Length: 346
Image (tube, rainbow, N blue to C red; front, side, top):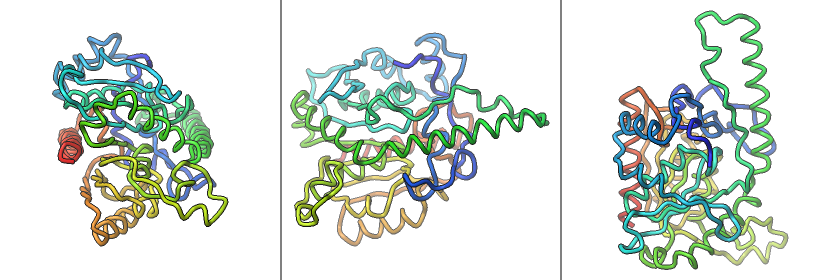
């Protein structure tokens, strides 16, 4: 597990515009991933769990029950994939539903992601958060992002900062080139098969598997909610057009996603399960035209969906973090309520 002093600092300065975006690479089209998707901001405030949760509860109003879940986590393996598992306090004595939690590039060792997963567990879900990157999370900087944000930084400091940003952007693009559906989808398939066996009671109680995804993970919620040619659904390039006619999926009963990245029109047009989307106004990482075309397709084809667009918030706002702006904190709670309500209603 990641050290507790690498967590919970919100990427409040990461608006969806300039910072952290790179030019297109062969790995993807459109904007690259932003800083919020690949970095847990370091802070020296949290030397132990008690200090960490005292701060979180103060600024987020998170109950002590969530802190208890955080301490009750377990790291395990399902289908040979490392997973973070967090359960309702009364499980298995009371019925639960199985929720697959797909993370941003920071992965399962991110304390931010772990605490966010615990919030869903406190609402009655048995949450399985898989290492969809197979031990290869995004390049993660522990450099204080405000280190050079002085009123009049020296020329050398400016050069150093730009060089660091350029190097990290290149590393992120190289990382993205490795995180393809051909790599990620087989991992997720092994996990979905494994949870159906290991947590058969929770899967049966919910009538299937539910999924929630943030940033990078949001795209894969859409893919798991979709119907695709069998070879594609398993993350394998189709070598024979005739073989690709056989379709499979969806693999989840319902999905919820927030501020997706690298989402394509085809991802949305493949969706067959009910989905709710937390989106951001003028988000370069999930462009308005892709979102609106996708929504129109889902509506036209009678696929149950919900799309809410939040304004005045940064991409990445829905993951738990230390925000000072009351508007962002309110939007974060609203986004969680939106996703939770959708999952419980389905």
